[in-house]
Image 1 (cartoon, rainbow, N blue to C red):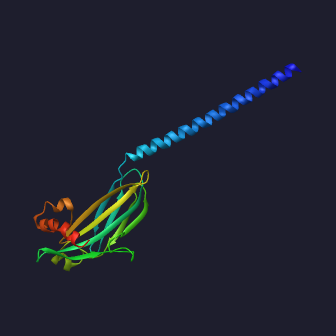
Image 2 (image 1 turned 180 degrees about the vertical axis):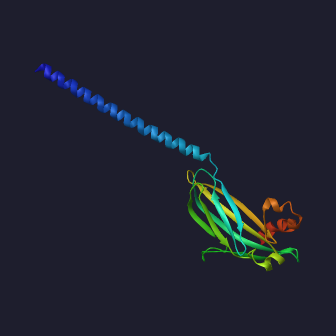
Image 3 (image 1 turned 90 degrees about the vertical axis):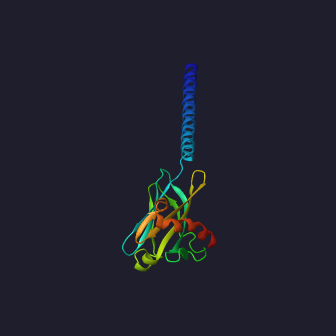
Length: 200
């Protein structure tokens, strides 16, 4: 009987040791998963999310494309948009136009809002005001389309922003950097910021 008791105690000890080993393994797994998540979070904190903006033109309409070019998603993407018409004859800006889908917001504010944009995901939007497909604006105006973009990194909700400007002259599209190299676009480029501030 004493031998049976000893066997039972030994068996119970083995069960307790197994349970303890199992618990330790679970704790180790939890720590490992937490470390991986923390490492991934820290890794993402070093990634600066990037937004690529392209301006595309057809015969009768223009549209703009936004693409998340970073390996992480971005959240709370907001795009404000206004178009400014530079009168070629008078040599100054004289037209402001804006698109708005929300009557509560100021014109041009939150023209686009997207709660989340996955890596490599794109969104596009038609821009109809002062369409460069129309002959009249092409002949009389240089159109500056200004997109103010803000978005956040979800891991720490850091805010990022950029301004993209496209100039359209005689049906041709120029980025801001391209416009700086063209003599005919020097005045529209130099006067743009002051004109924007005037109408803020």
